[in-house]
Length: 170
Image (cartoon, rainbow, N blue to C red; front, top):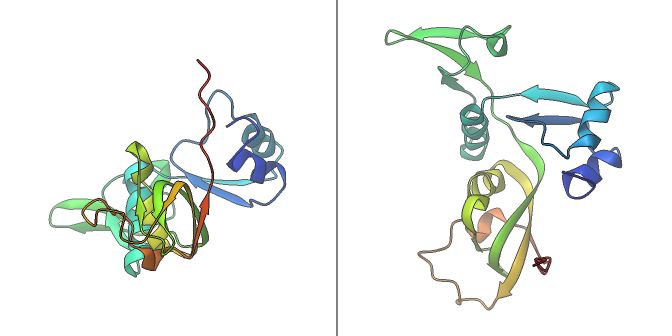
């Protein structure tokens, strides 16, 4: 959004392809300009399929069959199967060289605790990437995180970077 985060990477030409379920928001002009100019590739994926494909990569699966998208333009050119009286589309895993994720807290080993919706894609993306860089609001001492609250284990995180949250204007 705007000129920060992913938009900054897009503007710098560091992104060749975006795979997402919803590519636009009201302030996403950087992506819009690049896409209209043909300077960036877009793969539109239903959100459930997106999560499933990322999970498949993290779990080492070769591919998954999903009913979502069957019979639509999103399934065009893809293998389909009829399994147990239902139609499915074959979807391949989404792997990443790098995952940039955000968490509320982390320790130096990379164990992470998330806040709210940050845990939707952060944990599975950490598993699907070769290198995960976690931005955290707070780095805590080893053993300070309640093991029951750790969502991403440190084995999936290679780097932890502490960034103080922006002050909220009142």
